[in-house]
Every structure is written in structure tokens, then in C-alpha cells.
Amino acid sequence: MSTVSIQSTFIDQLVPALHNYNRLKQQPKSEIHLHLGGSYPQSYLTKIATAQQAQQLQDLIAQIRNRDMSYESIFAQFFPLIEKIVITNRQVEDGVVALCDELAKDHVTYVEIRTGLKQLGGSTWEDYLNAVMKGMHRGAQNNPNLKVSLILSLRRNSSQEEAKEAVDLALEHGVVGLDISGDITKGNIQNIMPELLRAKQEHLPITLHIGENKKELTQTIEVGGNRISQQLFELQTLNPKRVGHAVHLTQEAKNWIVEKKIPIECCPSSSVMAGMISSYHEHPAYELYHNGHPCIFCSDDTLPFITTLSQELTIAAQCLNQDPQELAEHQRQLVEEHRFK
Ligand SMILES: [Zn+2]
Image 1: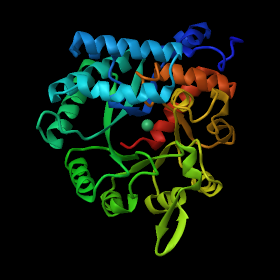
Image 2 (image 1 turned 45 degrees about the vertical axis):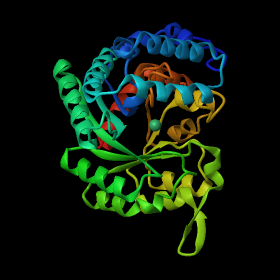
Image 3 (image 1 turned 90 degrees about the vertical axis):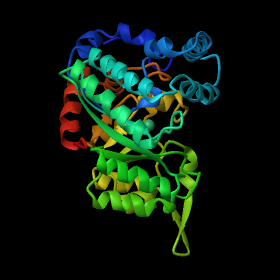
Image 4 (image 1 turned 120 degrees about the vertical axis):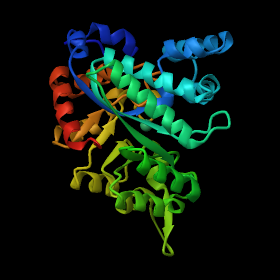
């Protein structure tokens, strides 16, 4: 095993040094936390962007690699730029195909892609959903070893009407689950709770972004005249099938997740580069994993975090002091058990 320190080295320089990275790349792998908007391949975006946008994208990625700008400010520019580049449903569809091709190159054999619904160029949410589904279908046809499912993301501060439409569309179109995301301090999740509970009644499983921000540790919510921990309220009320990130958890929330053995979708590069933790080794999931808790390593957003699933598994294996190929195989088995379809 390489002795290169993960904290002090850019990961794209580190990974080729790890002796079994290439063997890991050839191994079948499963990915269950991947946002479409942050994972369109750069080559695809460059093809459909204007020359100026392509240059902006290249500059942003160079800044991320060189770390010469705060990640927060890069992030604030990155997603608006993607939204200026991918502006039609046809581009979304082709982008999903390009993403599937990229995943297949990394020998991903099962993926749950997630996306929020968008209205592009005066079209409807349903048009967007159909475009994503068509792209998934074409992507799977191009890559017969890849199985692709879709999770719909809903932000905590969505309106009740938006949540209702998203749940209706998810149920009608064979979406495999819902993802609750967005800043926990913005909006009131209670507005959309009736729709989320309806989705659960209809057997649509939920994964919850939780513990991304330290502010969550003191965030409370008013329920029946009492103020209680928002993390615990969301966990107890939604009883999610999986949670995403789970970096900053209150003790009660952590106990709840551990006792119920709720799988954690851990995204190491995202957690470091978005500033949740200051080094790869600090991710609290490693200790839970060593204690037998199901932790599944994922990419989150491959483009701004300049990563792949093989890279995230390599990082996690190094932090866990485990063989990356064994970790990938264990992960594949965990995903078989906990995937949404
Ligand atoms: Zn995420």
C-alpha cells in the first residue's frame, strides 16, 4: 500500500499511486448516491456548451484542482453554470446517456441516479422526468452490464403542491425512491410531511440527506407546542430506509441510526471538499463501519468533486485500512440488500 498521505495530497495525484486502483476499476461496483446535475461528464458539457461556458467550466475545475479558491464560492458558481449549459430536455436525456457510459467505464453495474424535477424551456416536470427516463433506458441499452434506477430529490423547503406533484409523478413513472435534500435550516419540512408520508404508504422508500451542516446539531423544530431536535424529528417521522452523509449528527440521531442499522451513504470527497470535515480520516462513518454498521461509499457529485466511485472506494479503503477490492465486493452485497429496487 502506498504511504502517500491522503490529507496532504490532491486525490487525483494520489490515486494512480495506489497499487490496486486499476484492478478495482475493473471490478463490478454499485453506486447509490449520485446527483445527475453534478455528475454530467465534463466532455459532454463541453460539447453542448458555448465556447465561453466551456472555458468557464474548465477554469472552475482547474480552480478546484488547484484549491486556489474557497470551495463554497466555487460551488456557488458551479451549479448555476450547469443550469446555463443544460437547458433542454433533449440535452438532459443525452447527458444521462453520457453519464451511463462514464459509469460503465468505471465498471459500475448498478446505479441509483437522483435528480430534482426541473421545468426547462417552458416544459413540464413530467417532460423532464420522461427525458431522464429515456436517457436511462438508452444508457442501459448502450451498456448491458449496467442497471439504472431513478430516485427523485425533493428539497425540504418545497411547497406542499410541489411535493404532491413530485410524489404523484414518482408513483406513476416507476421511480424507485425519494431523496430529501436541501439546507435543513431553510423552510419547514412539516409542510411537505403529509406528502412524504403518503409516498411511504405507497411503498416509495425515502433516503434523507442529514448531518451535512454543523448547524443541524442545534437546529430544532416546533411540534405540538414543543421544540425538539429537527434531526431526530425527521428520522422518527420519516423512518428513512437510508441516510446520506450523516457527518454531523446529534447523539440521539446517531443512536437512532445505529440502533435501527440504517445504511449510511458516505461520500468521502464531498465531505472533505464541501468542508464538512477537514480530512478524509475524520469521517465518522469509518468507526461505525468497523463496528459492523452498513456504510456504503458513494460519489455524490462526480464533476465538482473530481471523482469516480473507484476513487471514493480507494479513499475509503485506505482510511479503513482495508483491501479496496474487498471493500467494493462488500459494498456490492450491501447494496443488493439495501437498494431501492
Ligand atoms: Zn447528495
